[in-house]
Image 1 (cartoon, rainbow, N blue to C red):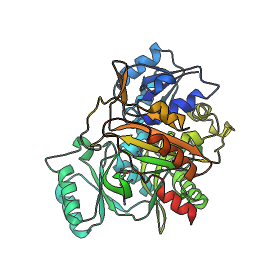
Image 2: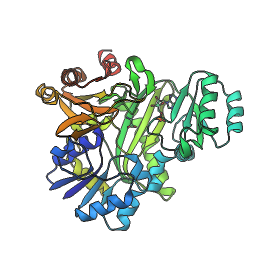
Image 3: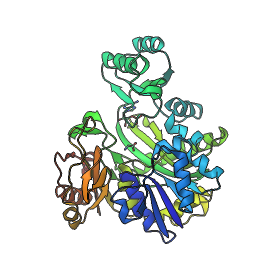
Image 4: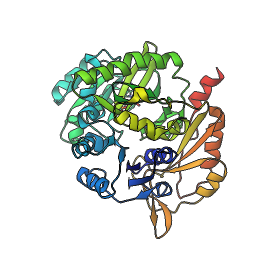
Length: 427
Ligand code: AMP
Ligand code: GLY
């Protein structure tokens, strides 16, 4: 099978590595990929927001199967378009991807089908949001309903923060543009977070390892939210009983509900969970693998990942027999550019990847490019250094040993990835 992978980040590099291992895979086209993915397949420049260009590429390359990494093409309906043209593609249709593309939609689905989540109200007018806030003091959470590259949720610890968050979204500034013109204001939930990933075929699902992301830029969860500064899998907070409860109370009613809504869910259902004192509550749904969570979840998947996705795409997960999780743990340290998630420089030469990999770690590319034959930085999150071990401590030691080898000007990473997991392991 010739496989096309849409996307260019660390998640897509992890997908390419997993797909390359499958005996079903005869070749990979990366659309557009990155310099790291060039070791797995042929990278072809294309804009992932341009569905017509993606379709043309799939046809020109005569690919048999396409895997969509990021949310933007999914929400834009790339799956619908490919299917109309008779092409096989793994991911949700635009209608189903609205679980991520519209928080107003996903909260309504959760409410309708009894999925536990924070109490909420949806607003399109500043005045009504302001009077709601008067009756609901901080802490409270203000979210842009649409896609905002992971930056649309504002956890407000004071009333003033909440007032300015709604003002910025619903007022004339409209900092998230159309995405912020509908706002969800929800109850603040206290607890530890975990991410669960279900590969879904519309009715059945296969669960991958749980993971925990580190969204804030600085150690001890300080500073602004980022796309994710590191992750580990499995997450000890996601105990067997919590996972069973999430399957029964979240994933199963969501899949059943989406069928009733006429938008059956095929693709990755990413469930962000808060383990509260009252049990697990959904923080958000995403319609794709997490980034950087994919970098730790996929190395632990012991089956044939391409076969799994191919079964899901044709609604035949119940016939897939290859499920197995390996026993160990994985950790990824994200190496970022100085200044991220604000402004940062690019084009800085990167050294030390071979040295990092000599420690046993694996270096995945996220924001890199080749410039005159030299590998340089090209994004806020530059590389992900992955360690795999028999337990979390070993995985972290390998990942950090690798991370210290990589050099570019202003290289920045968190030093406390996995600490919450380690604390639970030693309890
Ligand atoms: P989201 O974009 O919905 O994933 O939110 C981003 C981050 O904001 C989450 O990973 C949480 O850390 C935090 N967050 C979102 N919603 C809530 C909530 N209701 N209570 C507490 N924290 C939240
Ligand atoms: N790491 C968070 C996300 O992929 O949404």
